[in-house]
Length: 369
Picture (cartoon, rainbow, N blue to C red):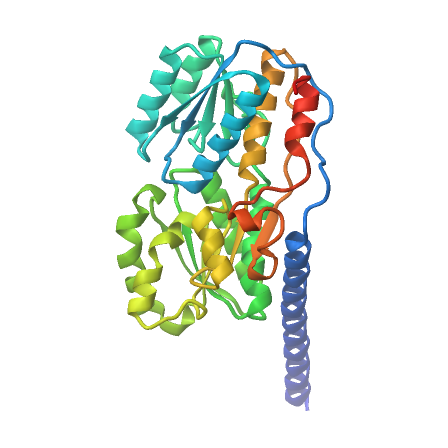
């Protein structure tokens, strides 16, 4: 009798546990669907700053890009160039060419030209800490774009502020797409690049979302340099297909560049552009990524950065620094692009460029036409 009761009690516990797991799974999928809907709706009107210092005149700003082959870094630089022209500053640009040595050389050359402002265009702050310290000692304002894993000033380095959307929100949005689409049965391979602090923060956050989503699994986190994606991704893709087969339902990456070089290997394996593994990026929203999503070929989504807007914000933050004021604290909202909403918020131009009047808003603050 006692044994029977024990068995009955154990069975009841198992039933309650299974019910709890099923409920948690359903909740995770439901939350993912809600979050995808929220972040894929058209953006609201301008929510950035409306007051600040007038334009500081006669300034020079140098945008040092981590790698001009990276659509995100290149796009943010284009925004800086447009904003610098509007505010009346001299704009210069330098390419770190995707290597530690190249970035150090570009930054040192920028410092030697004695500008008023240097922008870290996707350059990891920790990697170039000594050069950044040198720039600050020479009275140069340093502003970051994706230079570390949060917005605002750096905790220890003399960086006035860092421009980025919330990387954890971006990661959650990207990982929520397969969780919602596949009803909690995701087999994800996550691509990161440990060269960049912000990349590791995103990939870790995506992994946590997937692990919490029903029966989903993180099959592997692949650490591979973005700068060498053209050489590494074809063979990596083939190897991963051999290793995981149909279990590999989803590719999640910290940047669209990863997917630029996957398609030929997938096609060679007989996988068409609309089949698993679904490709989803947690930034930055490159032109070719928009084209892939629009055509439904080898990419399902990207959580794009408003790159041009962020370029304008970089100039505004630099102007605040030069005027002796604090940073604005503005963080642009994250925005998820799917095939269903690709025509909104700049999609037709193959770039995320919210039509909220940000350029005129900044020009009004600066007191320029």
